Image 1 (cartoon, one colour):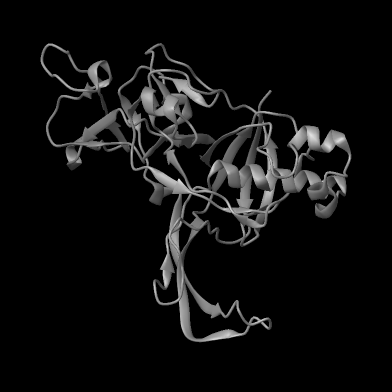
Image 2: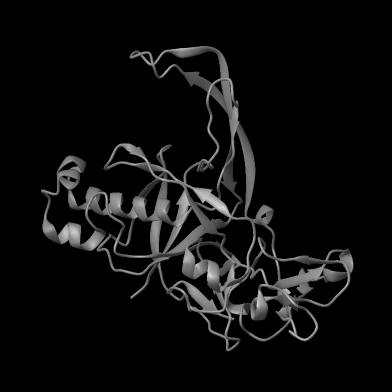
Length: 315
């Protein structure tokens, strides 16, 4: 059973990238947005503990109600549920990543007056024409002055409808980058004094008016119908609500698009046929009180020739 949620932040959101922000090396750090699935999973686990009145110390020690640990997973372990998305909710529609197998003309002729674009879908390359170590996983697309639509967004209900005239929006239609500059702290000083003459600048994300984040959870967690979620080390918060009416479509192409980031491993590397720039993500392990190891992820919209998990849609 999948539970679907909307999330409306009270302010900007910030999720740091993989680059270090150390004095003398850099005064800025990149941002990842929308947030990665493990950040959303952590926020949901925290919300369950808060709503059930479970202390973090009891949870970390494993002395809380066993039903809680069974539902959200033990402290320090991966959650026993998956996250689908996140995506954007706007004007009554769910907007999901475009597959990296979709292409369109770069010039304005590819953009119709009503905001839709004619897409061209890449196809397996005839092996008699092209020899490659990729063998049958080599795809090609025919056209002039084309660009990939990977990284763009399309309505969920149009993803598999067979019509090549699709509504396409860019990330800038859903959120804007907002620069934030602040002081640096001297972490070696127990007083956490200000580090003299040193500032940090970060790009935060602010959702546009009428836009919310959406995501699904593959397990019923027993959360209230609405409440507060806190995201990331910055503890940015907002209101979540359970929502209804989302339907995941399915095509018959034999190719599967990931709605969420997918960790790179032997299986996913062997079945990926189209993807974008690999994202390297880590984070902070609250149980171990140490950094998580960096992992490379395929971005949402990556296409595979096998249904590698439950968060893939057949195109």
